Image 1 (tube, one colour):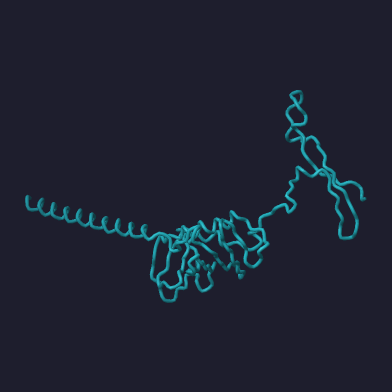
Image 2 (cartoon, helix red, strand yellow; image 1 turned 180 degrees about the horizontal axis):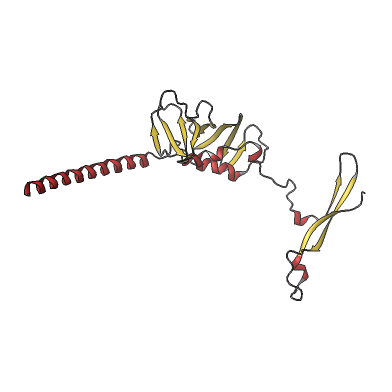
Length: 231
């Protein structure tokens, strides 16, 4: 009986030692992955431009002193927040897994979702391709030019680059005025006819309080523009 107890204790100790060793290796691997950081080590201070191809359209975004310019159309009014989201995605390209490609599998990289090229202020060029997405793990395959292994990164890192030129446009007023400042607008149509839009204040039924509780009727008005007769 005593012999069985000793054998069980020895086996239990061996299992515990194996578990501790496995934990140590896992922790070491996790620390190594975390220490590696982004595969695109750029910052707002080191980025010069990024170029990406999506749905057959290639766009080159130049970056300087916090401002973005579309190289193909410098006067184009870019949505700065959308461009900044791309820079944030680049800085967050941290692999969650690395794997050796299996022969016969293209991982969506034969026709990538996005091709991306980054140029730093030092003249260094980095190239990437986003492939297929794993909808179960919400990860996407990333190929880094010059590396044999593939990376799996969060799918949200590719999302900012899935925008066409039209989707990067930010509406603005060339005259620098807002709708609240417009009192009257004369329009001339392509057929030569002229119309006038007049600013009016009318009651807004949706905003009105119950009858008898009005304090200042101007608070419940809405601004509308109504067309007058042709000029």
